[in-house]
Length: 101
Image (tube, rainbow, N blue to C red; front, top):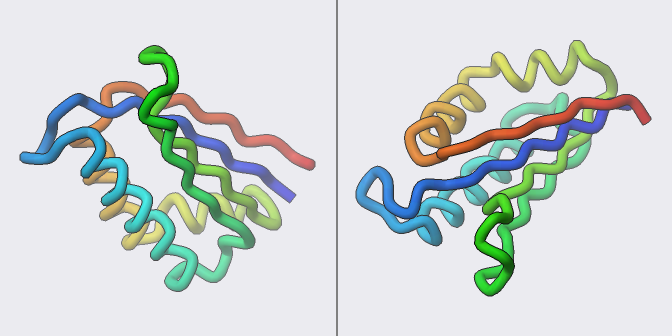
């Protein structure tokens, strides 16, 4: 099994939306991929608490795949690419880790 964790910091405003609105959009769009990409075994999208320290990341994607090949199917899937394109417009930083468990 592969755990794929991604953290995003969002711009305060982007694409005509506040950080809070963009975080909600990202959560909804990422979570909708569970129904479209069967290789996703588990996916949870968490939004940082509004009163947490300012240096924290804003969103965490915690997902699981059977293997690296399934992760690659997810990453290259056209629906994921659409979500990633939106995230790319509203994020300021990204950090990720993929590990076997």
